[in-house]
Image 1 (spheres, rainbow, N blue to C red):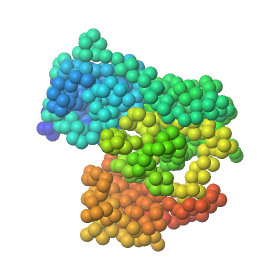
Image 2: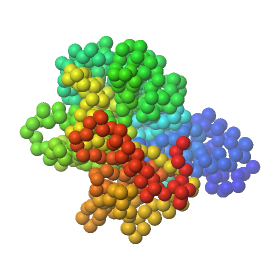
Image 3: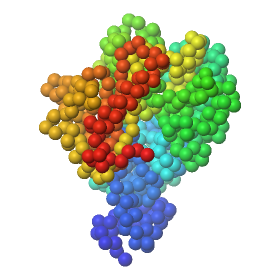
Image 4: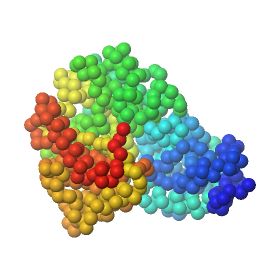
Length: 595
């Protein structure tokens, strides 16, 4: 019986005609037999587009999900776009994959599509961390790169992260053009499905040749090798059932750490796409996902925990305190520590370089402590939109202009300290271990050093959460009332507003002609208020869920110590109440607090 929607009928007919995977074709046929129009619409009508970190979606049948057919379609768009840009690309594509269900198959299908378009492929033979694929794209001087990964998403998902020739994630116009071609030419060529000759093709090569050079180049981040070699510290490491273990273990060795200092959480050491021992495969979730790591650390006398996410591009850190409790650091706290460490040691190694040509980047919703340190020490800080797709490309632009970008990071535990143009949890793990080892020789802990930085540069305490929105039009109305006739609030509580940056409409009254330096964020609402106290708050509408998020950073004058923490937190509590009352106005708009 035909479905009520003609467009859906056509989509289903095309799917059943084009899909050569019996399992996913059967999924759609079963929904047709059930006349389940709602489920079919959900799977067929969603557009697969590139977001902050590529395309991500559940692995199911349908044009709006990731599966064999849609991987082929996206890659066809990618290949045709490369041909349109380069003529006939001769340098090829570096391709990797993580340990999730279907990742290797998706990578091989993508490789086949490129080769059928006469584009060379360099495919890793086994699972590879995301940053290593970025590095391979650079090292092999490829035209583009690709990794099949959903990073820290739930086990049901997979993803498609694309790089351009610079090794940074694609941005416009590449992302929109790939999608345009995919949608304009949706029917796969029959040969795209035939993998029988893939590895025999003269255009098929191994990307494994870039692995040793990756470790060699990242060793430049190793500043205190002798201290590492003799440290009594033990580091407990978790790969989170992902692909970081072998790479991170080797990076520790390259940094000079003895084998006995690296203790792996055995149950989470090797790739397992079902993530059986953790409720959610994201180490940013903190203590509730670090249970096994803490047990392992306590059992082995370890005082520092380092955990990668499943594709090893993020890193989480925790430290055992004197009272036996574990402190899980936030991404901003780790960012403060790595900013201090990289700048201090890079400057020591490069004392004659003009500091005004040295940059550390971070995202617009990450801590402003980088800017505070930069202003005090003489180097430069730039902020970008959220995501390493922006930081990676900006880093490459700055370097092309003769500058030194020595670090980039964002609050969601992502750090880019080395030569990749994407966040790198492998090299960052070794860097954080080196920081801990050095501090130990000074009789200090990681927490001690964090408070020392706050004493020198002022507390920078960040709080972020979200409120649920009852309907999409409420979000629009809330932000419209904030910016009505550009008459933004002039006070938040008792704090006066110094300036406002609205990236949705392109307004920043701290800049000439009120034009912001950052690119616009027209697809989602985002407004930042800079207070005369130095503190900052940002309101941002989620692009994927009915939420309004806020990020508040309380910045105090220098000179305060850990003994002042309670009063500083009280000050932050009051600022948060004022932000909610002045900007969110939950009673007026019917907002629902986070549970």
